[in-house]
Image (tube, rainbow, N blue to C red; front, side):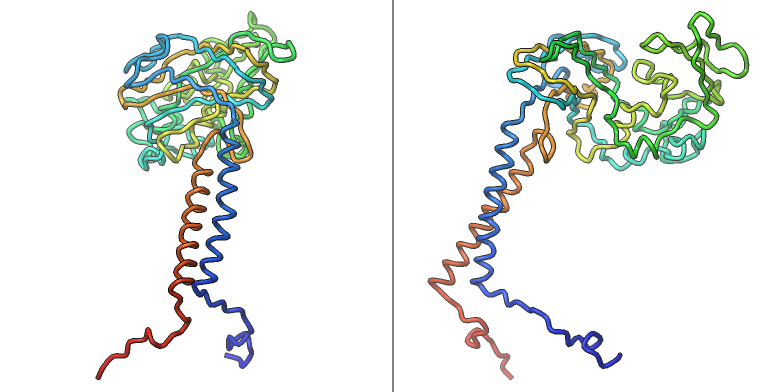
Amino acid sequence: PRDTSLYQQRIRAWNPVLDTKWVAITMICIGIIFVPVGYTIVSSVDELPQYEIIYDSHDNAPYQGCGIGDVALANKSCSLTFTVDQDLEPPIFVHYRVEGFNQNQRAYAISRDDEQLLGDVIRSAKKECKPLREIGDTALNPCGLIANTLFYDTFTLQPVKDANGEELKMIEEGIAWQSDIDWKFKQPSGFNYEQCDSCDACSCEGDDWSCDTPYKAPNGTCFRYFYPEDDTTRYLYETYPNVINPIEGVTNEHFIVWMRVAALPDFRKLYGYFNQPIKKGTRLVFDVSLNWEVTSWRGNKALIISKSYIFGGKNYSLGRFYYIVGFVSLGLGVAFLLKQIFRPRKLGDREYLVFKED
């Protein structure tokens, strides 16, 4: 190599010697910083309003008859009532919470076909989709464990006024990551739909449409649609008709939120949010359609209304982490400093060297 400071590693550099005094001072400084930060975070979390109702559980009595035991697709109804004990400013979030469901299990997390979700293929050939790739001779689109275990309970807010006297509306759009909506989920190649001028004149006759009857949207508008290979394929709207409509299909945001798997077995996912203020004393009543059972795998499910702060929702983990690091650093720093004061050791003292005898 060339005879330069860079190549010969002769560039001047700072090489700190970490003696006991400096290590102790550094650790005490870390503790002095981390403990107040932890206190600030925990205090902020304490002030966050959160209302939670566990409405179905494998080991506790269900909330006011909301349990369905181990019966999937029970289509049972019940109501959850929340009483707000303080004024809430938007945004106000509505989450469903699941405990004991391992979306992070590897076989579950990879059980999907991303090309199929992008609409490129109708019948998946990927082995990761097994055992939910097809049912008999009928292909599943989308295939895999994640798509075919969608959280299937629905929540509908009963009419109520916000703090300004206007009707409070729960928004269920904008809950998924925009990148997921834009780049990861598309209707099958060949899918087509058409809005009808009137529901009376809307017909699915002809080869251009695969529907048996037109789809009627909540606003009263009717659509006819075409799905390729519909006779030999079971699409998402056919598996979950109460959650997924045939026009949205895999682009439904509740489905997209579910497909982003959780890292831990106890998790919450965003169902909707309020962009209006809620006055203290307001009673929020949600009608729940119960279909997703938790008893067979010993889980729980809950509905949560909450606010958030700069670090997310009501979670003490980050504040406790700062507390632990701060107090441990303070303890070790003080211990090292006391040891150096009462039993000092000279840096590089040869008395501590042990020479091997011949």
